[in-house]
Amino acid sequence: MALDTIVFDIETQNFFTDPGVGRDNFGALKISVVCAYSYLEDRYHCYEEHEMDKLAELFSSAKRIVGFSMNRYDIPVLTHYFKKLKGAAPDLWKMDRVDLLEEIELATGHRIGLARLAEANLGATKSHHGSEAGTLYDEGKMDELKEYCTNDVKLTKDLYDLYRTRHFLLIPRRDGDPLRIDFAKPAGAAA
Image 1 (cartoon, rainbow, N blue to C red):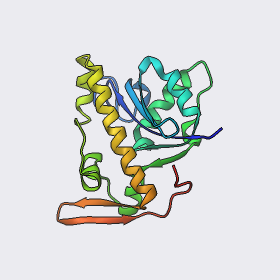
Image 2 (cartoon, rainbow, N blue to C red):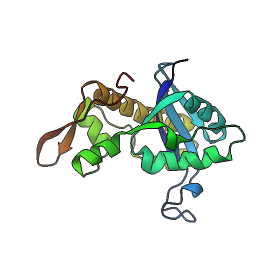
Image 3 (cartoon, helix red, strand yellow):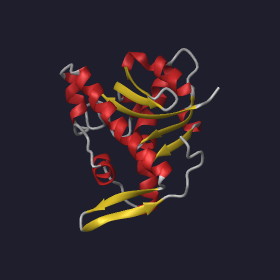
């Protein structure tokens, strides 16, 4: 059986700055939606908080997971959820991971937002700002929230496709032309 590559993003109902949460308290964050793209299925999926068992099943088929700032945010939050599941759930920390923001930070020493990176490399941008996700959830606009999260996954997937095929990304700079950052050919670059 072929193993999958999954590109994903999460949105949460709350954030560290909310009352009762606190800095780096990942266990207090509540998922609103997780969207993922499966290369094997060539399909996007969205899961709400009560569907984490289905998400764990999707991740169980993956050899690699891809995200943008996933090592700092998405994986710590999902790990708390997966530990609570009755069935077996994959250990995301043990999986082959490509965190595009981490790759850029290692190469440049700086962080960059997904919107600016997508604009420089794809001519596209995010449909909403991340801070709007909580408001969309609070207002019950789940379809719009899923669309926003799926758009972020699409941008991340398209950036990952460039990363793995052309082995460089353009990093926008405030004072001139974008900086080209070359990456070594990633292991298993075929997806």
